[in-house]
Length: 271
Image (cartoon, rainbow, N blue to C red; front, side, top):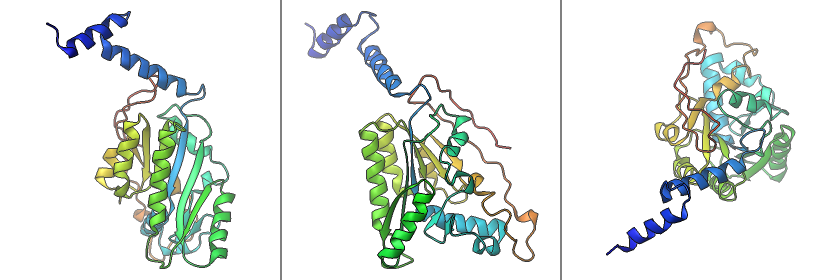
């Protein structure tokens, strides 16, 4: 006599006109559903920026490469210490970020949303000042108030995690672009990928955690976006071009999960 599992398998095979087994039918249906989510222009992508982490790491890298003078001479329009930083070439032109993805991913020209999470000390007026500064950069500001300057507001990580997972569950994006170097996001990234989404990480190579890098589909050195951010600022005394970090960054292998039109990337060096 046939077992219950064997009966179920036979019934599913009989229902499949291609006679290629139930697993093949389910995989084919899943691919068709994913292809429906892909717009003619490419994958829908949404940006999530851990602003505090990005600003702190940017300051450390900029001082290491160009010296403290380059950081202190930056305009508050693009940089507020430990609170906010955003590349000049992306300011007021969010679609410019797509140019960095076009080489490797089939993406739509415009992101679904650019979410920027950070926190700051001070009164409500200062919080609103940061929100206005982010809004002028075409970013969606999510700004929290914190009591101590050296402490990180818990609301930043909690809200970013919630939005990353919720928007994936609601099928509002195909590809998440995460700016952070915080390994606390590993569990939510793994869950987002189980939902069939891709996650691309932009982080500073000097500080990115191995487990965070490995959890994502690909990891890119965010410093490549910031090199011109303060390159023209005066250098610190005694610092010359030899201090510039020009080491080529290796790209990670990306296994596509959203479209059969995308290709698998092999590791290569950026010139």
